[in-house]
Amino acid sequence: MTPQSWLYAEEFVVEDEHLQNARARADEVGVAPIGPGGGAALRLLAAVANAGAVVEVGTGTGVSGLWLLRGMRADGVLTSVDREAEHQRLARATLTEAGIAANRFRLISGSALEVLPRLADGGYDLVFVDADKRDYPQFVDEAVRLLRPGGVLAFDNALWHDRVADPARRDEDTVAVRDLGRTLLEDERFLPALLPVGDGLLVAQLAITAG
Image (cartoon, rainbow, N blue to C red):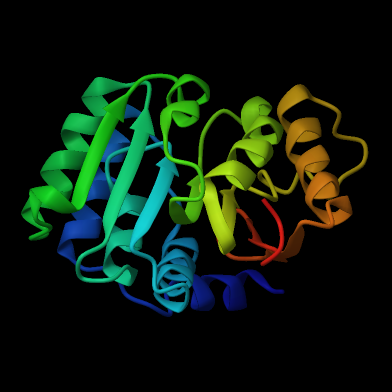
């Protein structure tokens, strides 16, 4: 894909002022949110799954959360986990300004690997992860427990700035993301695909009989 085609695809769905404001907040605090193409893909995944309950790991300033909520059912609830309380304060401002009712999202401050085990088994339609890359492989088993049969798991930065496709890149983050891809390919519980949107979106559907 040429850079021109990639940019065309990224800008295919135009972001409104609320998403633009969320990106401005992200720049201020040094957060790198999912790109517009990846955000549009998340909205589509949430809509196709008719998602009523979604878990997000990595709240940021609300960019991905707003995309997800716009694809979820009108009564759907987003549960978003992040270590940084300040980021969640900014995300709350983003969602509120965009007209999202307060009862449609809950923001939990803390380590996702400590929070997720407290969430209900099989209670979620979609799990989206955009967090520390070295933790990515650990979220697979958590997702199997959290997702309903047929639910969707998605990871941002699956191409990790073009490093994953380069076998010479052996830094810890790149290896973790590369290993995650192999794990989902080899796991018979999942039907995976790697979407070349933004920095790469790795998606996988949990088999109907898995759990």
